[in-house]
Length: 94
Image: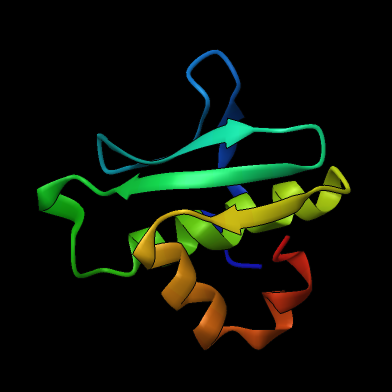
């Protein structure tokens, strides 16, 4: 896993995964069920766009979800696209 993906954290107080980069915060909002995280929205600050930050955020979030033994439900098109581009993550789809 890349250095950026390793820095993704689960901010349970705000129900989102976060990644700090160059003074900005990219995040992925989620709703947690008993078995899965439903990622509803991802956002990258405008100044950080086009650098693959959102992909690193989702990669790190999926690894945290995997580590917790949970599934992910892609409720946002970016996560749907990410999982389609990374079939090694398809087993997490719930």
